[in-house]
Length: 50
Image 1 (cartoon, one colour):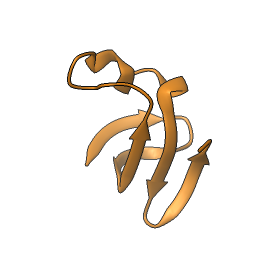
Image 2 (cartoon, helix red, strand yellow):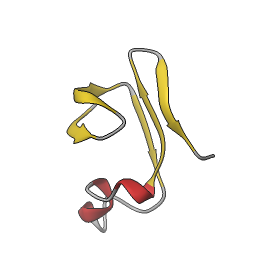
Image 3 (spheres, helix red, strand yellow):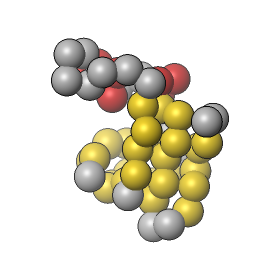
Image 4 (cartoon, rainbow, N blue to C red):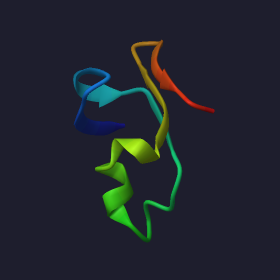
């Protein structure tokens, strides 16, 4: 789980986060919300660009 403040949902842990990029090579992709394709928290989808 990821603890991060997102503009799409309240701060805290998210259930599922799908990003466009390799977070193992570039950790900064987790800070840029434009790389986040799907954000789910408490079973509710807040962003889905898949």
